[in-house]
Length: 408
Image (cartoon, rainbow, N blue to C red):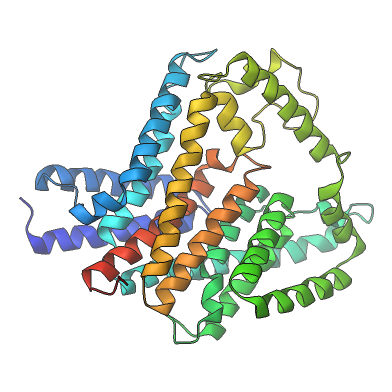
């Protein structure tokens, strides 16, 4: 049995490595993977020696329905791979679901508000510095662009794929965004918070990821309509000024969102049409998430760039690869998490805690809106950040419950 003192040190080491894993997705998947492997191994050894996982009865009860729906989703995920059209090696990539350990370890190891704040703002500081580097690189390189090059097609992607980078910055920004409207003191000065958010927001926009821009626009619109009517007025004014100031090429990029003839949009429509045919042929267990491109080619020969690698939509990919039951439990899992977020938002009393939970709600909404147009559920980097964010409401509820701060 490990002593209490040593357990504390191990817990601190796990949280440090978890923080490294999350913040390093912004610049190195290798570093993120190594950090994940180390803390995962340490945690498993710790649980084996202590003969317990660190969950209290209250934790288990709060996780009951999300765990049930995730387990059922995983059952159909496994079945879909066993009976996949191309089953060879299909089970190997199931290891990506180990990322869900992030939720469990966050809930069991982050015991108070100070630890949570340190993790969030450590990530925020590093991401802001990374974003500054990207912005400087962007503006240095933009001078050497050919005059015939469309500036709106030049996208920030120096440290990773632009869509992935845009999405993980979107999630982080929306997590902390509600804190800007706190009436009381938060973890850091609001001025510092704004200064950290500006380069992240600017670099997120310059990834020119249209699914991200749509998701942010709608998420903030929902926030304004439901939570903060004053912000809605300010938001409208900012959008108008922004539209008037940006170059016409950037305006064209935004307008292309609504153009079904745009190559990227047209390609998605073609892929979704193929996806519907796949689902009709394999409605129960799907085609299995393995060698997707090969299966796609049996329906249609890819023509556009990136066509057939996946279906560029969470909902379509889940439906096609896992079948109708996998799809139902995927939706049920996230609905159960959303219900918990709403419950905790109403029950916690501290303003900062409520605003952080509100931030997790906005982040999850943005993830699903963005996921209409992109396969971000299958993106290691995006899921690493999302799963940590999804753990935050449970962490907040736990330390509020322990300190008798939950509203009856």
